[in-house]
Image (cartoon, rainbow, N blue to C red; front, side):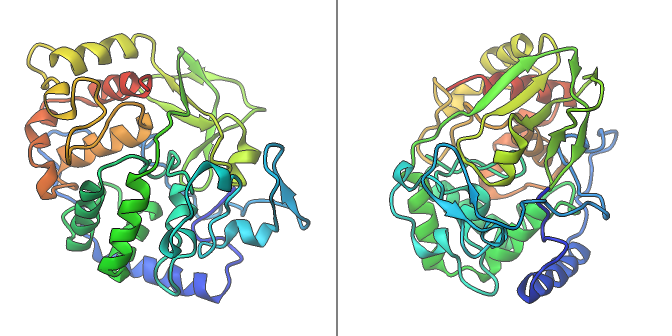
Length: 332
């Protein structure tokens, strides 16, 4: 599985790992509201210390629907985002395609050239450029953090925002904002789910293990782990949610659940595709949505743009967050 960074890392990754370790030590844990539930571990997967590196082989790597070929080392180079389908997007700016050594990784390495993102990070395609700039400013200022600072994807972003120039931030925001978003998540209500393991800050299904009860969780996994590890942005993501979650989420999103929260369309638009500087929430990764709702509720995410959300999430239980995220993930 992919790691961040790989176990057998070149010198620049080793330096990055040391910087990341320092960041983790310096970031204080957010103050949790009295009586609040702890962060749901299924939404915040953390790599085990002994997790093996991905096995991508020694020879050229290809995908069935792409004409391009990459070597395994290229698929783990954060300063050169693998671009399997260049016909799917405009030409990438330097900061998107290659970043800037030694501190700014290629944005498309994690968020993918078409901006679709992955369960461990965010989909950026189609978000308002001003919104993206504001989020990076909040990360730089330390007002947008994470409830689980052991997770590398957000802490790496926090460090990168301090290294990025204003011009690089603007270029990244304009590029991702111009992309058309695609919902590649298939939501499946099920009482049982594949047993999973943490594999590179995301969950991967163990095909050889028996299924287990879903309980109070969302289990979001790649439909094809090999293609996912090769950073194929066209991969379908399967999101298993508890039975009844979509119906319950629809009620919370559309009516506010008799005062438990607020009607989402009041700010995010009638179709939940966003308005002005307010982002779209339709069709987003359900794990990502739960993390953001929880981070805002816990105080970890407290930028100026999230202040209106504090009252929205104040009374939500984790089960409510599961329902809301499940419903939103079904939308286009």
